[in-house]
Length: 76
Image 1: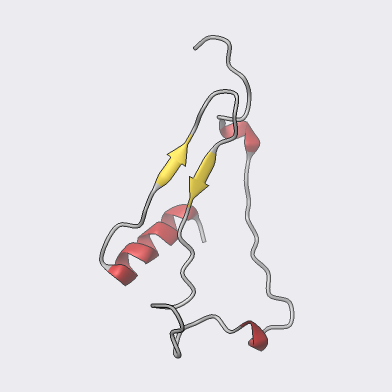
Image 2: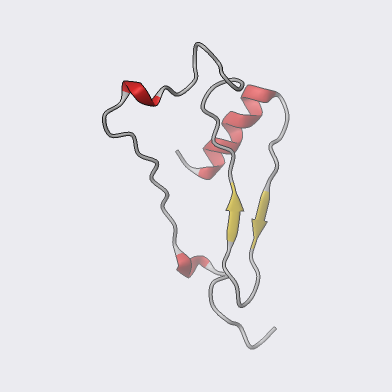
């Protein structure tokens, strides 16, 4: 699932836009906060993620430092 899809899913589940922060600053790292919802609400008995049902549960995050915000820029 992409970040766009996670934000859209959060919007459709809650009916409001989630907190969005995408920070590209020179001489620092780029940061993006994306909501990951594991159920409709906390302790959701029907749709909550139950790690006991999986043998090898993983959260994979892909990133690319070359997209910007990760290298110094002297022409600012």
